[in-house]
Length: 380
Length: 257
Image 1 (cartoon, helix red, strand yellow):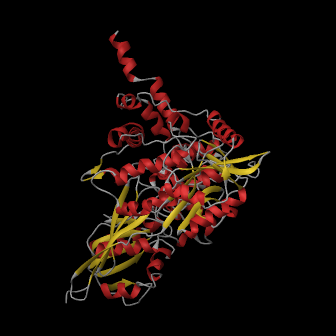
Image 2 (cartoon, rainbow over the protein chains, first blue to last red):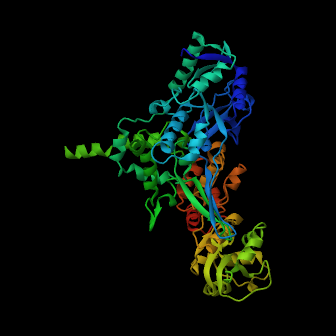
């Protein structure tokens, strides 16, 4: 942590102002409709001071026991993907002109440069996971690329965990390790209300250099370390990832899929709140006269019947097959596809499932009654 | 010049709200009138022309023997027939009679019930004739109506998703009223289309658009029951505008016992 610096609470506004001056639109946590969501902010006054959240499967409530802290909450229903990969996006439009010529216009790129304020370690990993989806390989997503290129990331290390968090078991948190421009740890103790800041990039170092800071001392570093240790220690939910790919591949006919299908609403909420889910569909719409058409991309979900619709019907007609598709993709086939798990342990799918289905519980149930073991017993 | 497609709008047992949304298309109605011949649309014009029609839009449910006969004539005169609204697609609020004795209702409501000639049930149009497309909602969303008409005029598939309200609620950036506020909400089992109107104003979904493509109301009911909803609350939740839609009908009956 040699490059780490410390700054006082009031300097946070200088940091935000400096980002604004550099042309960034600030997106950060703010309270709306009874939850902490990510929206446009102007200054530190818009941050959810003292706000905490109480989360459990299918339940989320705000609390107020965070004292003076601005980042005492955990992740809410929104994720940064809404800003890098918008829920609905027109890709092109076409128009037939007076002479009957067809003109196709590609949608202009969003040239805004965003700054994400308060990205947690799990969500940093989620952004890196989506980078692989949209930027690696032969087909780069030009819209995602433009948004991502301009994006400045201020990470915040968690100092507490929600009951639905399981980043420790996924190896993604609670401390931000990579993928940020600046990482902050908020410290509120007898020594005052301050932030320990670490640069993660040249422009991050440059930004910190422009602020009124002092080199972090031992007390700051110990306090910051204690904060993330506290967050890690406070996590009792876990997903055992040991051989998870092989486990799920070997259990595609496990009776647990029927059991979870009995509870799953197939509503798609898990996929919409998941910071890595990337499925979309496209709608082609025309006006009444047939002279204008639009090609619009919108978030889809593997829980919708249309998602697997091909000539003749939906491939995944049952809830069982759709839940299995989602979970095995997230935890297993994603590894084959992108070289990483699609799950970052943020717990959103657990909290925001209207009936509280818990991916860690489902994975554990399958592990506890692994069909391969049954076969071994049968062989013996 | 090729003749314009002939459009007809029909009303059965209904409140008129759905066909009114056609007149509510204030920015598009003149364009529409230029693209189609409004051959039969009594709410807009008394100039009622004979069929055949290229596209018939039907509002309302079948509650009388006369309407059961009339819809057959409409079908026979129509190349395409699209039903709009909860009445036409599920029997409407008047399908509440399907759960009771309509004679009992009449004796309470009307001074001289002997003048009333009605069927024992209110049923969707699709139970009587072949329907080419069903647009859900109570009332329907006028943007969706425009989309369906545009699609039929351009001979393409309407871009009308049949997934849950939750998907459009999340796309809109709403906070879930069920998870964050503990508000009972039918969004997870309800057909999208309204743009998640009620949850956008911190209310639970009332299910105006009827069941989504593959609804799982039994699981939702178990959860709501475990969080304070009584059996009667559940019966009432499913028994509103789309009471006659099979998934909601069966779920409400399951909690009536």
